[in-house]
Image (cartoon, rainbow, N blue to C red; front, side, top):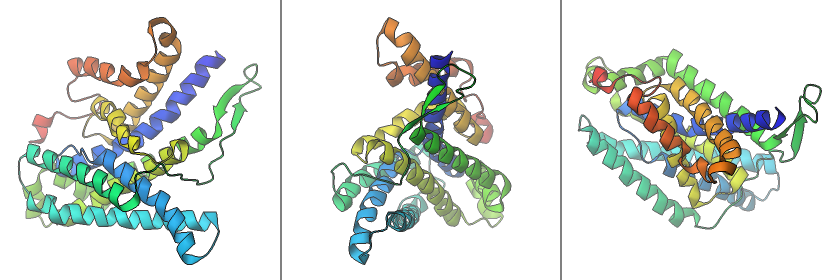
Length: 309
């Protein structure tokens, strides 16, 4: 039972981080009706900004306080992501109001390539370190319940807690605030939202900024665990099955889809891998999504796209 529960906990913690990345996809799709291929590039760009600012700011201002350096770096990276959101709306989305979805989709693909290239030009292409003080030592939980207890990595536990808090906070923001209701109205019908006085440009800046914030937190967590490198863009590929599984229009679906994928791939790798070969984590999510789409094309919690048109 111990190994099973350790694998289960590890999957849940990985799943929360997948949900965090998937949430950026869902937020932008709900507000603009387009699948944002730039989300992975936003994670990388934000993580690069955080890593480099945490080096540059202390050197520039002449202090050696790690906490202050991280706080200032996080604030600077967030301001940069808001600027990116403003420029995306002003230079890209604002020019494509009421265009076909495929046009907006290709625009986000262009944004992704631009952020990848510009991030490398601006911050460099080495592997950078983010140290936010997350403890890396393993701990034993439930020692009184199971012999030897459950071995859990502290860093994973803290990271999952941060991701869970952010996911809950963003879900509440989207569901219960006036801005969140405006975002949902824009998602349902751009022209109708404009006709009742909802400023489309401001809503898009807000939602891209929120998605940028989610990308920054995901980038900081993953960068702390793995280092900031250009393979971070592959996180988007891991989040794609989560979004499709949970439903493109569902914030709770992104959360539950991430947990299902995290648990499923970990259990499959540990318990099926020795019998059928390794590498299950790489393809598990896509195979799972294929089976779900055969039964429910809109995902487990998504609504039919035809109903939104």
